[in-house]
Length: 117
Image (cartoon, rainbow, N blue to C red; front, side, top):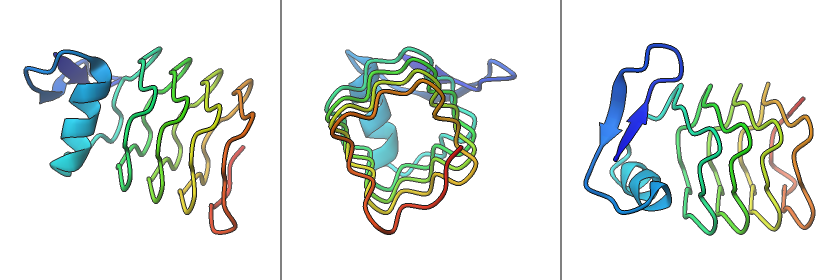
């Protein structure tokens, strides 16, 4: 499986994962830079994405229910219509992130999460 750059289509991470969630979690675990990653409609349900660098990532319509995004950098990320039900965004950087139409029921933002649009 591959993760592509949202504008150029270039491969920014590749591995023999069986699911997109597994691929993204591996990339995060190895501290891969997922800036501008195209993760539109990705099923990341329950994924551990702590400290992920998802700056400018396109997560439009992504399924992030029960995902752990603690301390993740989601600055300027597009989370339009993403399902963040019961996700943990404690201490996440949401500066400039787009959350239009996002599902936020039960989402933990925490007192130190920063900004969002």
